[in-house]
Image 1 (cartoon, helix red, strand yellow):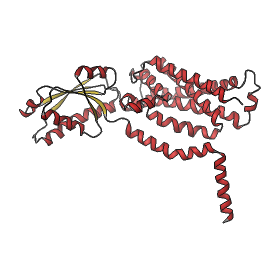
Image 2 (cartoon, rainbow, N blue to C red):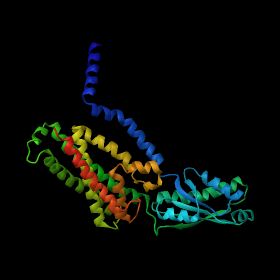
Image 3 (cartoon, one colour):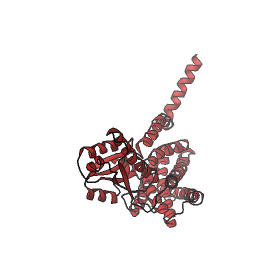
Image 4 (tube, helix red, strand yellow):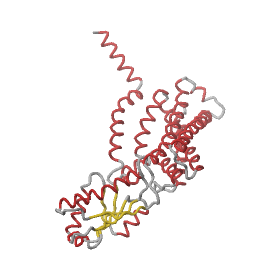
Length: 359
């Protein structure tokens, strides 16, 4: 029994001497919970402008039916001009217009068209809205004792064509590949300097440690870029998603890998353990990836998730890639700003790493 107790005590001491690895293990259940929660929090309750052409009992009853279609709408009452403006500025997924004469038409037994305008930037989200309107009409008819459904949707899409869910998700995966490839490689090459005891030699290198680490990170970024371009090519030729702007694909991969590599280098210089780099960076990147607009435009998922997404390079990378492949504008920020932020992240991380690498 004493041997058992001694072994347990020694192992606990080992955990204390390797706090980073221990913290990663303790954080894993929380990370998994966060991942599953983000799946539930993104891609539902589409922000929808509700334009009431009349405020009558049946019109209000139909609105209640819309609210009761499970996880479909976040209805925002407003006038038509405001709704159109917000739809154009990508703040709404759809506009539902209940026309004047709705109550009278339904009571007279006529089928009343309810106008539905959709920002069909993502087919999965678009289909949720399209299916929910007839479902609401059926709920409305049943609750009010009508023998048949007397409401139909007059559908109008904002974009000339839908973007399939797989095509949208495949493109966002290119951004994920760039973030992970750059981050893991950058973190590994810097952490290895301390793990093998070579960090002391960096202090006597010509130009100091910053120049050596920058050179290593440049090589890591080159390899990460090549790996990410392979992923981009698979999406192109394997998934059949032809880029609308091929040059933008390459530039987007380059700036994303550069930013991710610099961030990874900073983490590696701080953690200084190669074994911890991959699980740490992948574990942090995946939740941010789900909250980056990977499943649908992030602007549709509520203000706090939208704000949180801006903490990761993945958000800016997804915005660039969706435009590069599909020509879609999925972020309120212009593309030049998305690229500028990634370059700023790269430069800021390199400056911070220089400070962390000092003896």
